[in-house]
Length: 126
Image (cartoon, rainbow, N blue to C red; front, side, top):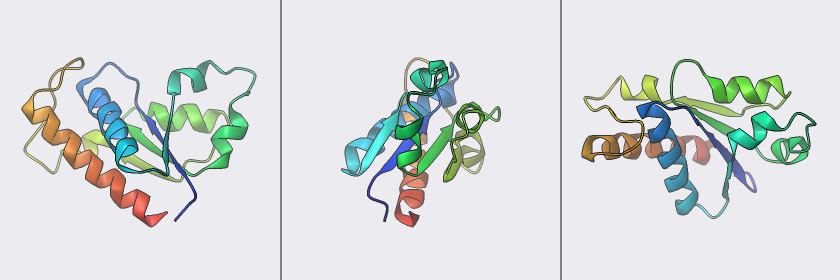
């Protein structure tokens, strides 16, 4: 297993973006070797001051929608993404969905649990 693993969540204003952020937060709480990346800071870092940190650990991107912004932002900065999870893709196999981009109801909490399981699978493979 890698010394540390970085998780990069979606910052988008969609229900699955919220699921992505909460799932990443939950995974960070569960694992001492997991850090999270602020995508706002990463995308605003025009000078590349964060690049050394971003290249230090394997990154798992957790995209909220099919736009794949997390991957695009990192790849545009020349940062390799070790693993990718598409929240919408994963949840399409289940009969639950998030509906609010600002609050989690009980169904959205189930979505978070599903995504946490997916992230944990990738973490265990690294």
